[in-house]
Image (tube, rainbow, N blue to C red):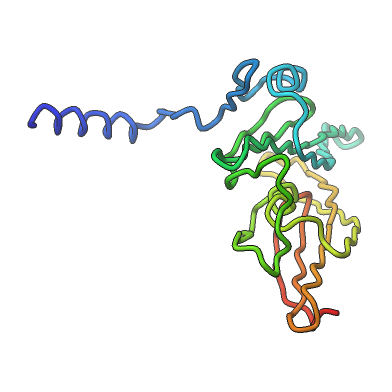
Amino acid sequence: MRNQRAALWFFTLILSAPGFTAYADTVSCKQGTVFVDDSRADVLMKCGEPEGKESHQEEISVQLDSSTKQKQFVTVEEWSYNFGPSQFMRIVTLRNGKVADIRTGDYGHSISEKPKPPAFSDRIVSIGESTSEVAAKWGEPTWKNTRQEELKEKLSDGKVRTISITIDEWTYNLGPDRFMRILEFRNGKLTDIRTGSYGR
């Protein structure tokens, strides 16, 4: 019993040690495992086409001298992989075609299963989820609206980053006895959930 406790304590200590990663930044697929820094081609060969794709552009401006300015353009893509209702979804972020981040989403859904409408859904949507995750839970919205914004951000090293933001507004009409739900996404991520007037 003492040996088991010692082993458990040691294992917990290793897991909490700085630098230890329990493969949170990987995706295991039928054809192999995807890691950070893998190329877009690697991801497609190992995991195939994702269920959902979102993309936006970032522009980084660097003042090289008083008369020279350099601009770099970064394409940021977010790919969502659905592995079914017994596994968590995996969201892969690519920057200019290379994997920059991998995160875990909510449980997936059966490919043949149609998500219930929110009026009857017991699945909660949360800030930070992608459009693919929300659509998997609530289905397609009744109405969609899209607009563009530009955000300039000064970085600590003096560079200026210009981010092109796509704002999607999804409205779910839940019928005349319920308030409509309006979801706002910024570059494919849910940032706001609000209540509208009664539906129709």
